[in-house]
Image (cartoon, rainbow, N blue to C red):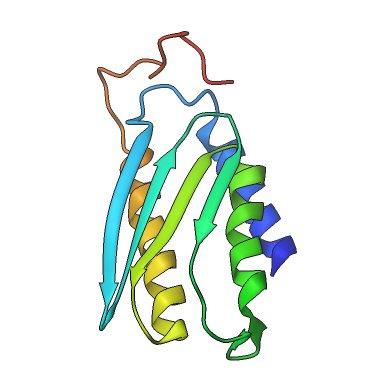
Length: 128
């Protein structure tokens, strides 16, 4: 799982190139039944992850819950993004995990959306 996250993160970083002309920031809140997660993304070139999923069990299916947290951290590191993912509520750990990944997907889509007026979305003029 970690190797997949690292490979996806590296591919994401490479695909972004100069990171110019994108929105840069993305936020999404996603529900799944009783669970609700928020993901916040900054395509910053400063890798950092704050992941708080609050799992109650050690495993979701055949995967350890601590590995799910590590997957998100590894993706953020390799993609060179700042990432915050928080489960706001939920009892079922499978639902907590799934809505977290869904929130991340939509937040990433928002952050990389084309913004013709953005140029390089940084006061420093560079996101490298």
